[in-house]
Amino acid sequence: MSRQYFGTDGIRGRVGETPITPDFMLKLGWAAGRVLVDHYDGPGLILIGKDTRISGYMFESALQAGLINAGVDVGLLGPMPTPGIAYLTRTFQAQAGIVISASHNSYFDNGIKFFSAEGTKLPDDIEHAIEEQLEQPMVTAERLGKARRITDAAGRYIEFCKGTMPWGFKLSGMQIVVDCAHGATYHIAPSVFSELGAKVIPFACEPNGTNINRSCGSTNPEALKEKVQEVGADLGIAFDGDGDRLIFVDHKGEVVDGDELLYIIAAYQHKLGGGCPGVVGTLMSNFGFELGLKALGIPFARAKVGDRYVIETMRNNGWTLGGESSGHIVCGNVTTTGDGIISALQVLLAISAMDKTLHSAKQGMVKLPQTMINVHRLKKVDLSSDPAVQSAVAATEQQLGGRGRVLLRPSGTEPVVRVMVEGEDRAEVKRLAGQLAQEVEKALN
Image 1 (spheres, rainbow, N blue to C red):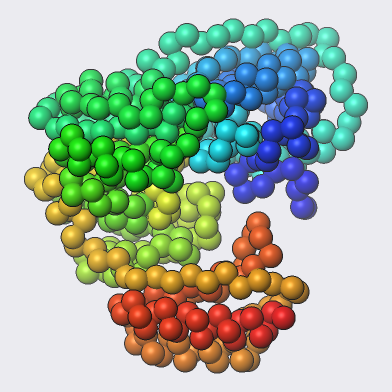
Image 2: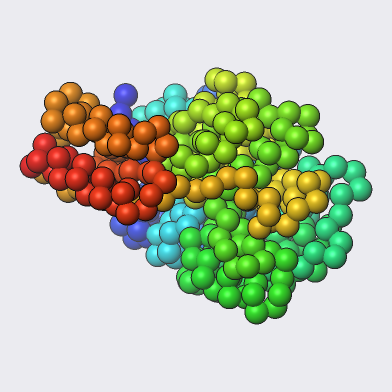
């Protein structure tokens, strides 16, 4: 069954444009409340948290009103990282958790996503049921819900993050620049690292409602690179607006992305952490990451792009580590979802245990040059059955000689096909990608 509102990661769009409007959020809160009341055979508690966008106040109030009208009690968490909401949903034994955030997008966007009682993404059948309920007229429950603000939410989550580290683990003597993207981690991440003993230099930790992700955070690391080198820090950590992804910057000012961070965690687990049964990446994970894991004897599997698919593949394989190049990392041995702070701690644990700097720890993996070309699509074509395209793909793969790869991936949000080639020689990769893009363009147009 196709869904009208829910995508792979909730509902997202520009504020003021359907469905990111107050009246829709009121109805969504009511519909979700009604569905969950039926699912759990009675009303319970639903938590609401948000990032620092100014529109969050408006949507928090609208969702709260809709849930109360459905007879559900509401716990208001205030600004809270997305993974923190997942954790608190579990610990409060709530029926669900609601996140108001558009992640790494600019402040004029916003969105909604749900966590189940287990702190995982809401099952598809529940999302379908909510969409069906949205089509019904809103009626008031006989018993209205109540709302309360959970004042110790931040402290609870800080202690949870610290508690994922081994007893006695300390960051004493380490200087860290912490870039919170003026987002949901601003009042949490600096405390976690400083309470573990690090000297923390907060950066982009002054949200004003409209500066979230602006020239900062995991998608804009240039300012963090400069700050790390300016103060002579050991490393820098940058989160996105809702705190579920991260990137590092080493002491030389070099960005360390999600593939490299996963490699460092996997290498530590393999050598000193009791073993690493396997790692899940995505179709976009760098081929050098795969080769680095292969050299260590660690199995690797690729999932479709999106943390939902990464977690699904991890579960199917019985593995506990996976993620994306963007820095969305899932450490399933300690939590249920992608968590920027916990992933950062796992990296710091790894380099500490291996007695390496961040820069030296990533050297076992060599990222291969990658070229991606977006080919505009005028019509839908099954490229897997086009003889000319498949012949061009085979020829490209033959020239790469097993030390690279080819990917043709239709975009889910734009009318384009992404043509990607990876290999050892940057000039050759660029040339091969251009040739393959020409064949794809012929087939599409």
